[in-house]
Every structure is written in C-alpha cells, then in structure tokens.
Image (tube, rainbow, N blue to C red; front, side):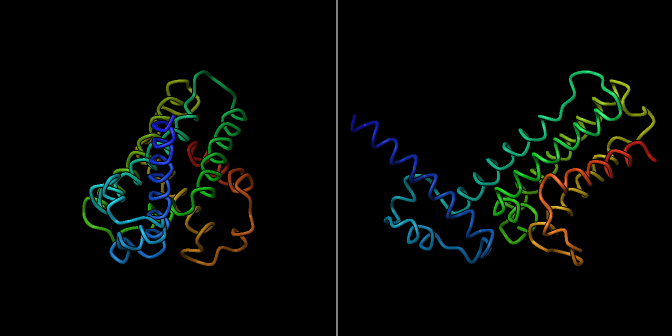
Length: 210
C-alpha cells in the first residue's frame, strides 16, 4: 500500500513540476526561469527535481513533446472516414476548429510557449518548430483525405493550403488569447465556438478557391 501511495505522490509531484515550469517558461522565458524557482514554488528540495528530470532543458522538451501529442490528437479527430456534402464538410471543419480553440483556451501557457517561445536554447526552439511542422502536416493529411473522397478539387495545392490554414490558426489564437498583432476588433470577447464557425467558413471556401 505504501508503494502505491509513494508512486502516486511521485506522479503528482512530477505533474506539479511540469505545470510550474510550463507557466514560468511561457510568462518569464526559458532563460529567466531557474530550477531553484521551480522547486521553491513546488515546495520541495532541489534534489527532488533531479529525481524526475535531469535538467531544465529536459523538462522543457518534455513539455513541448507532450503538447505536440495532445495537439496532434485533436487534429486527428478531423480525419475524414467517408464522403459527405459541402455543408457536412464545413460542419466537420467547424467542429475540429472548435476542439482546437477549446484546447488552446484550456492550455494557454502551452500555446503561449509554442506561438511565442523563441527565446529558449536551440534544442527547444527546434522542438517547437517540429511541433508546428507536425501540426501543418496533420492538416495536410486531412486535406489530402478530403481530396481522395472528391470533396476538394484535385488541382489544389494541398501543401500550400495546409500552410495557409496553419498560419490562419496561429494568427487567430495569438490575437484571441494574447492580443498579439493588430487590434483584435472584439476578437477577445468571442467564444471558441464563435471563432470556429467564422474560421471554418473562411478556411473551407478558401480551400475551394471561391
């Protein structure tokens, strides 16, 4: 029984380290965040941190890689299994974007790190870049599937369209959650569902080229 309790405590402590580190990396930056800051907030000795993570770089990379898995899981839910009407495709796209925006809203620090976190060391910058590339690739996978089903014209440039969608989503999330870029014109007051509805129509008819 004690072994089970110890395992649970260890798991909860690890999760707490990840939560604290993510928030500090996103708000203060990688270089400004010290391991001593993380353990002080967690209320444990510094040696406890090294029991779970070998370095600050290691915990940062785990945060990015875990975020990548979660984001790709969300995008994968938009993969089409069968043919549908134009309206069905718009609704499916809206549902996918709604899940994606809800995820972003619930994981603001992760999105802040991924969208604006360029101040880390090279391995972390590379991991963030790979995460964004993997998201774009997942969108490309969905577009190609829709083309196979005849729901999108075969003549479209799928790679270019996937890049546009990725840029669109990054821009919307950056302005919606963090007010980055030009004035958001009321975007901050919109719900994930409202943003998804507007973005889906823009995205879909852009894919059709109309």
